[in-house]
Image (cartoon, rainbow, N blue to C red; front, side):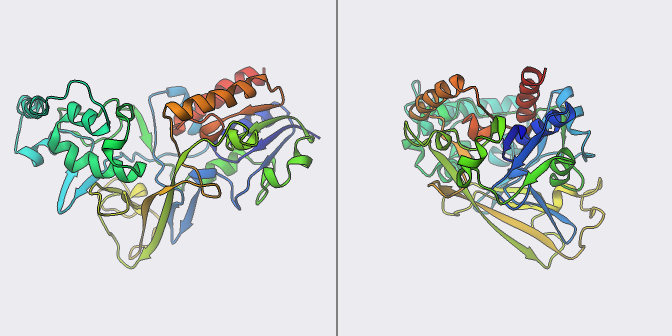
Length: 375
């Protein structure tokens, strides 16, 4: 009946469906959720586009990718400049001259470098045995204790001394007064949210929502020549080698009767005692060009915030972050070997390829697949 069954209506599945449909292929897209767009789903509440599954900020240095996504929406010039809160202190992220001035009262890059080097020398760590030692060997004790330690321990659900050093290969340190978190040339948020992008991609394509592949597997495996699968690769193969591990997230969202709650889209909470890692204030993603200007259609006297809590993953919870340690990497390699021999299914995205992807990298992955698959 179909050329392709596409499991998952997130970015990967929807781009593939869009490109296959353009080539005249018959596609069926299914999703277990009641809505399209996967984790980039945004819901309009009182004119505010709420990022239902965590903040998604589009950034890339790839012009082809930027032009591709701009076909489907107009992007604003939002720049990601998160603020970190440690107890009653606020610091700019990523670590830059504004951060160093607040930490140590230094003014020049030379002074900041000297201070970091002094702390690294004092620690005397030459062969880091765990994440804590690795981070201190990179940025010194002050930055680590105030801005890295608590946040990281909450994120991974373990003490930093129990985490392997390779999790933090580097920590971005900038000796300039610049709070732009990303180094990429292109950055922004689609005006009107992300859901519209996926809806445009899937226009004219058959879509079934609230439809779980695993509940209808027998019927679905035989209705298409090929399957594009963006769910968990280990579940597809019935966990025959064991379960891959993830970290999950829990979101608490509330609407407040104030115009502006925290003055920034993203505020990170870096002390361990506060259970959430960050608070997102959604309206700031689409503020107008002047600071504090309300975007068209947004309620003036309301705002919506989401607290983001890292959570232990178990089956039934949404898997967000892949645990790419040695054990899981070896396990994934076994599933990948099975997948490479399977002519029926192509795995894609974060869960299918067991790898955390930024949105621009997802687009690149699919476009490369399209070139190969839809010649």
